[in-house]
Image (cartoon, rainbow, N blue to C red):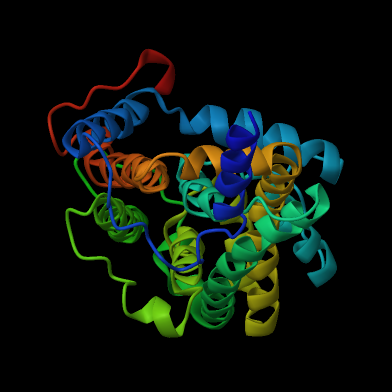
Length: 328
């Protein structure tokens, strides 16, 4: 019995330190990699079939934003910079529950450690999310400043209705942006399974938070392609202001709102079950890599298919793509 308790103590000691942020697990010890890849790809595809942007944008997003703003966010008047900044944060908060954000949990969750008190674990879990937000903030600020300078001539400024058989400039911008983001996530997932070279293997030795920052860059890139109605309203207000500083601040605050709920959920998870989760992840070789890989592959496949294949079908450029009746 004493021997068993000693082994338990040793097992817990091995998971006291979290995975060094920035290192993608390299697939070592992952069992049934081919099956994981197949199931993750199918899951990403099925998500494109059932995903309803209207439900997420209007029902969920609008349901969160309207009570906070006290008015319909799609008809809200942004009469001042202060109103615009408040609108940016609230609509970012409302836009939290996009399918792509599951990739954030997939890369951050394995970094949670089992060390210290519950409060200590919660604080520890937020560190990689802070580095992720740094990447988001850099992209958001740069794009917001650009919109403040030249936004009225950019494709996202247009409110032209989609035309069957034609890709508008706004659609092309979304396809290119999300297509690249989806492929990047897919590559990172394949690297986590060990199918391709880990792009952060060398860089993370000098910059241990490189992966978290890069994930933040990808998530920040959502603003460049996002057709989310509430964001488009903020985009047009920023473009018409002609103020790059206002654009940078507003876009960074929208990104901050976008990760706030994720931060709360992550901290609560670490507080309640962080120790047990870390023990479970470290109990078998490859389990951590498998969790990271599955999450990234699902998000990558979904993002690419949804924005670069399903969109073509919605514009009647390709003949057919399976879409659930409620997702039309």
